[in-house]
Image 1 (cartoon, rainbow, N blue to C red):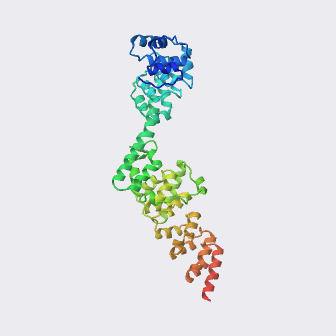
Image 2 (cartoon, rainbow, N blue to C red; image 1 turned 135 degrees about the vertical axis):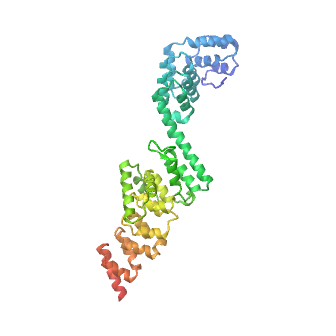
Length: 408
C-alpha cells in the first residue's frame, strides 16, 4: 500500500501513515470528516485497500456515491492527487467523460495510463492516449499496451505503431549496426551511425522514406576518421544559414550535378557507385557534412562536388585528405570560392607547386589570391598564363609583367 501523501492535512497524513485511530479512519471511510473534498478523497482512495473489512467496504461505498460534478471538477484540477486520478481512471463504471478529463490531466501517472490502457474497452479513449506522443516516448509500455488491446481502433494502433517504429525500432536498429561495427573494430563508423540523423532513419526494409540496414552499412564502409581526429572549429556562424533541410527536388538536382561532373571527368560510374552517390545525397545535409569530414577518399570525391559550400568546406577540412586530392580540387571549375580561398591560404599546400599552379589557372579562384600566387610561379608557367583566355585580364597582365621581369 502506497504511503505517499499529496495532502497537507494532518488527519489525512495520519490515516495514510497508519497512525490515525480506528474511529477516525471509520469516519473518513463514511465521508464524515469535516475536511476539504480533495483531502477526503485521497484518504478514501487509501482506505479502499484497508485490511479492516468494515473500513474498506464503507470507503468503497462513499467513493461510489460521489456526484458526477465533483468528479468532473477533480478530474480537471491541476492539483488533484495522482492517486485519486489513478483510482477513478481505472475504476469500473467511471463515466467516459471523467476518464477523458483524467487522461488529459498532467498529474496522471504513466503507471495509471498503462493500467487503464490494458483494461479499457473504449477505443476512443485509446486514441486519446495514442495522440500524446511525448508520453508514449517516455513510457513505451503504453505503446505495447495499446497495440495489444483488442478493443483498439485503427487510428490508435496506427499512431502507436508509428511512434514505436520512429522512436524505438529505428534507434534500436541503428544501435545494433553501431555495435556490430564496433565489434569489427570500426569505431569511426560506429560513432557516425550513433550520432547522425541516420539513427532515426534506419529501418529493416527502408520503407517510409527511411534508410535500410544495408544502405547504412554501405555508407559506414566509407567512414574512416574517428571523432577524436576531427576538428569543427572552422564551422563558424557564417555557415549556419547554409545548413537546411532540402526538398526531394533539390536532392535530385544535386544528384544529377554530381553524376554529370563525374562523367565529365571520365570517372568510372558503375551501378554500384551511382547507388552509393544516391544514398549519400538522400542523407540530411548535416550528415553529409559529417561524412565529408570523416569519410574516405571516395566519400570526399563525391562530396566535394556538393553545391553546398559547407559540405565542400568539410571535405578540405578532412584530416586524411591528400595533396593529390587538393591539387584536383584546386583545378575544379565547380569548386566554391570559399574552398579555393582556403586552399590558397593554407601554408602546407602553398608550398606544393602543382597545387598553386592549378589555383593560378582556375578562374574561380579570387583574383586577390591568384595575384599572391603568381610571384611563386616559374617563368614558363607565367608566360602561358599571360596568353591564357581562361583567366581574367588582371591575371594575364600581372603574369605578363612578372614573366618579362624574369627575362630581364
